[in-house]
Length: 370
Image (spheres, rainbow, N blue to C red):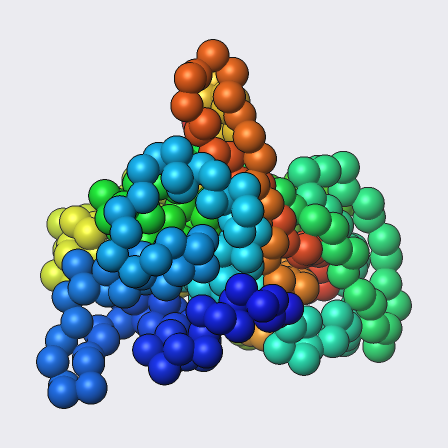
């Protein structure tokens, strides 16, 4: 980060060491307990007081001065960019770690972070089944499909993802709101955006693949058809060298698997799973993985993922989603006055990322007719 004369002034003070402050901000916004030099726990109020002290110093306020909304507005025009640059560091960490707070991400996503020295390069091992790359960039969901050869490497196309987060910055600078909420508001919005794109890219990519008749079934999901569903699982596992399979689907579709099982004799651990998840956590020995349903942005009448499908995926080195994160978050301030007399500050947060889906192993699809 560029260190201006103003930031040099702020962080040349012993109590405001830049690396120390960055570490402090990271720990606090990640819920890590902080201790002072004497080993005493630092409370949330104390942490926010310290963060506010540094932020107000960056904006040019003398220690102890209580700025008004107008003072803060003027100071943000002068030094707001530098304040955002400092806060970007905390957002960077939170966004990166937040992506991984999802079982789908951990099990099926291979990720590269360019900021950590990774190369935007992925390797294709197999060529014995149809292999397709489906790319999605930014807000564009027109997937471009491309076949790759065995032993071929490729890069994921990246573009800027941008989200807008509206907030009154003065409520944080005056201590009325917690700084962890500021970081969370930005990082959670990004996490949801990327996770949504991963889920929809996977579903749309599968929909565009030529049908593999042996591994696609459309029928009622009932006890009478249990043998068909079980055979589909068995076929997918057999086609992938006997590897166990996992079952992916929306929560509402995974719940329908209870129609095939006698819940009276399931283990107590499964009953606890049902109480916690709202569904069973497994079907026989096969783990169930939930794909969260989301609505199209600003339109609750349209769902991102059409219900009625269960995906049988081999659980063997099958990270079929490729995710490249350039790893640098940029926060830009915009002004959105409208009919308001005060300035409601809107921040556009940008981060360069890219997603690709590779389906290079046999998998099954059960289309639920009922």
